[in-house]
Length: 367
Ligand SMILES: [Zn+2]
Ligand SMILES: [Zn+2]
Image 1 (cartoon, rainbow, N blue to C red):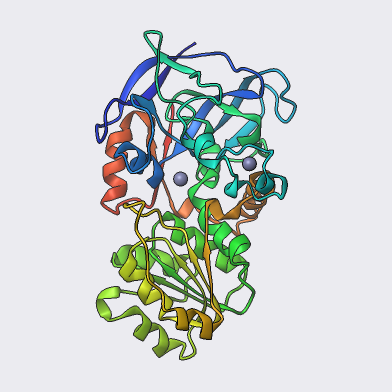
Image 2: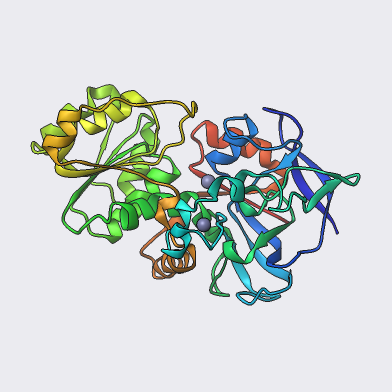
């Protein structure tokens, strides 16, 4: 079928809306009419070549929509179901079988391979294959082909524009708190960076009833937003070393830290803020994949610190996304306060709005 997709033709180029051909879903695949798709940092990292992906290609990995048809063998969803699309995984490796699919041994080829496992592409322009299957979906388009593994059936009453960011950015921040660090009520949390992932961590920390929730963020209006979402404190890094600001508040240090920045100087300050037996979660995407960070061996040991790498909030999406939607519907997880809705046709403008800090999480909608 002919669809409209936002195509990137070369590294760093703008998205170009154009007609491309989408094939039929093969065995295990699901064709989805996209209602909404969030804009996530990883789309832009791929656009600029920080992640390998064949170009021309179609990105987009926070899609939501309605199932149009399914390929052979698909039983999880059927035509007419409302679904969230999330990251892809193999379903068969040690991590997938242990319900930790974000640490799938096939994560890179399943999400960034740019084609089906057999090398074919669902997307073509003038019968030439283009990069597809980004995060198992390539949902910057009117329609996308996903997989039974990475579609999650959602409540028919759910607002799809608010569902789409759950598929990556929101579940990453919320899952860091609720799954990876398993933050306990009464504890303290320090969040480095007040973007969509960091603020999703704040929303989850409120649900988990942490007593002290601190966001470090240079942009004043994001600090204000953090406080309005339930953060108890918001530090401006310009006011002095974060570890000093933190220890003025919590002399023994903080129990949990989430770094969303992947900035080495920021991580160093974060670690200097950690309490004994504290946990430091690292989930920022470094611009340089070879970036390494030195931590004091003695410091890690004496503190009894845990340093935990986090992908997609260690989410098992079939379980975690419906949980987040239920919290959302109960008014306990107000994702809408993070979201700015824009038309899909304004995808390039949306990137500029998000980059300037004027929007925390842009969700593009069709129509
Ligand atoms: Zn796997
Ligand atoms: Zn993402």
